Image: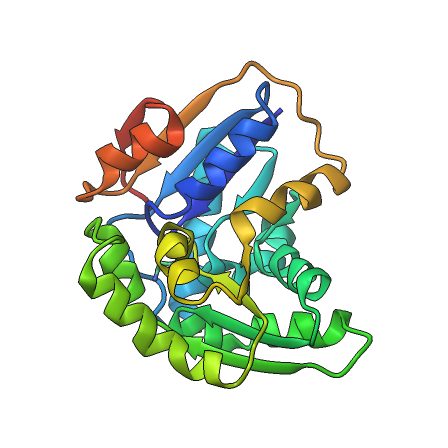
Length: 256
Ligand code: DGN
């Protein structure tokens, strides 16, 4: 079976890697909309329209029979819309991430970080509150500087450290015990985050989505096809293609 994974850029390759490792036979097509990244500061309408174009490419050009939205911003707005339009199963990262947060949080004090659009959508809050049996303390923060830091491969730099402190100190003072990395790029800052805030249990959607795919009954047989598409060049593309996608072949395409 072929699945299509899309993200606003290269960060979703963390999700690609996780799926490729767990389902070695599955055919996986990845589309990174690098020409239009970031989605995180855009309006709901724009995010939905870009997401529909990404899904359409993967379904019509690559033959994807299911879609995984690696992008938290797109997952926050477009899961139902894509599945209604294309009649294929669609898995986003918000529900798996929220479910895992509830599993690991001991005190029910949960921090959620993501792009401005993800935080504005309230998607994580809604998912957490719907699934929780207890009252939660949820603290959300948009961290717009994290994406460019990752895109510039500065994850271990003093700038990364400063930005992590700037965005997370408040959440730490609130006493959160669990931090949801609600953006594809943030797992790449995990080392810096855990070094500065070792008390947080970190939820990384790229890891927990696997369980959801297994539960959804995804047919994981295939010919191990791995193909990447990007809508433009991007500074860290080559490095991450090798690090996270075992050097799978990549092509620049245009959408629409
Ligand atoms: N992929 C986006 C997300 O997970 O929300 C991050 C990059 C962006 O578009 N801002």
